[in-house]
Image 1 (tube, rainbow, N blue to C red):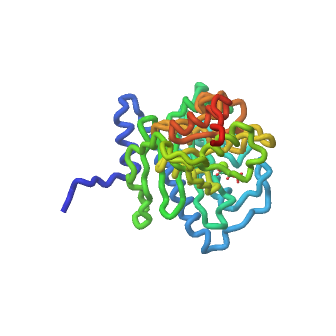
Image 2 (image 1 turned 120 degrees about the vertical axis):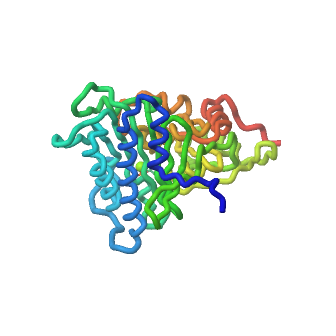
Image 3 (image 1 turned 90 degrees about the horizontal axis):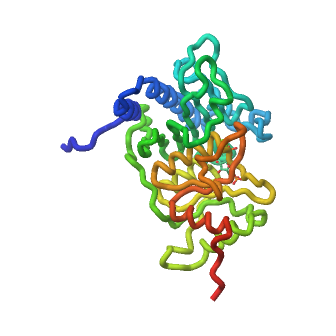
Length: 342
Ligand code: AHM
Ligand code: MG
């Protein structure tokens, strides 16, 4: 029998990570523990969605004018309910709510801020395609009491933790506290996330690009040229790349993290800022990708350096293997163009 392989739950991993910081109060591990509980409840509901009559829209639109699915609402509520009373947070904000979410008066407030997308990729639910939860955690900047919009609108480089959960063939929880990226796979038989991917590193260059090519006609010139470049043949740079697009950001970025390559949701002539939201989609995923050795950009600027002005603002997003993102930026900025056809 081999005793070399340690079995590490996500809770143990978080606590041990916190112990490495002498000023840690234990509040942070408590916050992540509560979040893990919410995620398990969401997973339970997501995995039985095909069995019970829970699929379908709830008949109203969210603040972005999109149809809200029942599971979005469920996930949104569960995260709030699991975290509103622990005393760790001073305020929350989610994709499903226009304004910030306050901690009820009857509960204590804490020093952290949570922003989340409760169920990303929800248009895929009915087709049994991967969906995910994304979260971003900051330290509060207001002094005490209830948190405010100011606490939520901090640039991404100030995140103290971020992560995502991908509900798929197996369910994985991937997070960073600024000390590498670690992945845990849910063992449903014991209801625990177990360490399965320690210190994930993204390849320096990949062979896969991921983008909704249906928007090609609205793309700017640099974007069109970059994708054409990826489709050309060149053995030295493994081109042509393969195209893979699930349409569920968490799943597309999870694959990009493990296999390398580039994920893109550009701005275009119809939607200059693209589709994805800075605060609870682009920032947390960018923190993860950077911590794994990757790069994330809006085409001209590091995503984590963008100064937010609105909770729900959108941003173009290009992230993945550093060499791929660098090359992409050169095309977008017109510094590189296609070699003339030979
Ligand atoms: P959502 O937050 O409404 O689920 O939208 C975000 C999703 C991402 O998961 C995905 O990358 C993108 O929308 C796909 O959009 P499109 O269908 O335009 O390619
Ligand atoms: Mg979303």
